[in-house]
Amino acid sequence: MAGFSTEAHSTMTSEPNVVPMIDILLVLLIIFMISQPLSRMILDVQVPPPQTSQASGPSNQIVLEVRDDGTYAINSQPVPKSQLDTQIHAIYDTRPVKLMFVKAGHTRLYQEVIEAMDIARGAGVQVIGFTPAEAAGSEQATE
Image (tube, rainbow, N blue to C red; front, side, top):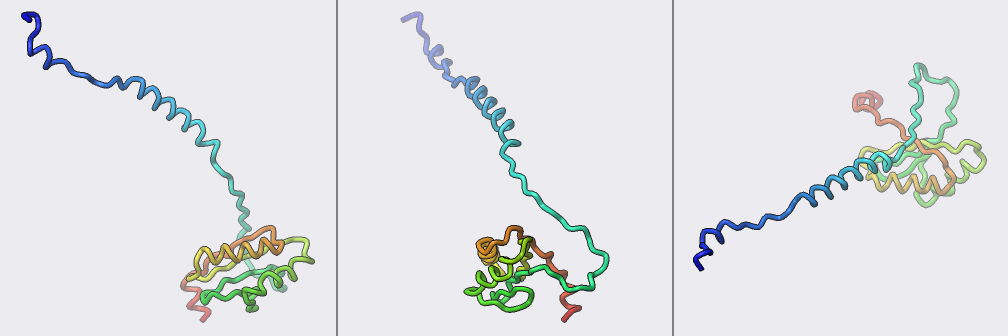
């Protein structure tokens, strides 16, 4: 036992080999970097040009309002939720262009607006747009 020393046993350490793990992580990083641009979804948005003057004739646009109190209106005419589907069908069954704008009240939940949009889609509306939010100053000026 002259060849064995207690100091030789205390200097032996076992370290994990991290080189294969780094290689695997680099391969995964390259795969994710390549696949990320391919998974992006494209959302087509059509923005109308800004209008400089108001049209003098009556508008043929249909606006579905989800009001602050939870009621619905089509072009400022109150409509109960149970009649919303039939009213939209009556308007859009004869129209070749099935475009509707949605105006949501400030206190309405996202889910309520989505439900109104689902009803409109079920009634045949193909394109749904949103009206811009009114500025706080313009609301006070009209009241």
